[in-house]
Length: 375
Image (cartoon, rainbow, N blue to C red; front, side):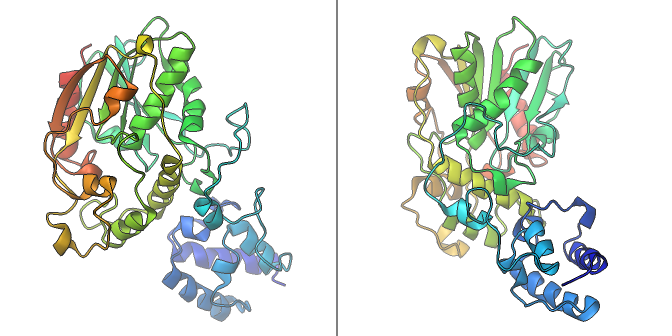
């Protein structure tokens, strides 16, 4: 049984290994989520034994995968990994095919968000003639849109952050419920009497669509939707988890230059993919469809040649081809079924799917947003 002092020393060593202040550790966070990979976990276990004198096995972090379970183990209070409320570890909840019934209150059982639900990207919501709400891609970070250039002096842009940023192990709810978690924040910020403009990149298009459903069901009106490289779920599958693993292995998953995507992004993206797999949207009633739906597509694939890329993926999967291969000029791609009767316009920007908000390509996105949004 370790003393409190030894536990603190152990957490300091782990914090050094993953460049995180141990005071930031949360008991429900998994070591994998915090960035302790298999190789570093084994080396860190060795450091705990040599530097603190703790009798820990090399697989201690897989047997006790959360911060709380690990601390309880060191203090002699845990013989085996304790289950969460649903009786499973994070890794198992991510692989389950069953969806638990969702409560009337969407926030029931959801931990307090670690970041604000919304962030003002540009403009002043109090004086703007129009607000544009941008929902995040699988990373969950609305702040990703912070790279956009100035669009319009009279238009304010609001980015929505996922409630599950830095706690992706708790992201087990549906796409529809995610919309319910955001809708009150959108209502709070929208000036009374104005019609809504909702947009989203990739899975953010699904979130925007579900929030549009909730708002219109409450008698409010959507003026415009902006779908940014968002493959319609009626036609495209959820991205297979194997493909996520392959893209991560090759450094193609949200990487910037030589810098690989952080663990928190991969964790949230994986949770998003699982929710998307269970998602099958239904159309908005024609009388509630936005006046205008703008599509912004990229034309580049993630790789120049799939056969030479070294990626072990099944190219018979439509969404895999959508990401990896160069494309022609895509049009509504199934969204016309969900948003019937709207006026559609199409724009084509530089870069590939994961480069949309990266420097240079964000300028291209900004130019097209300027074209399709009028103050």
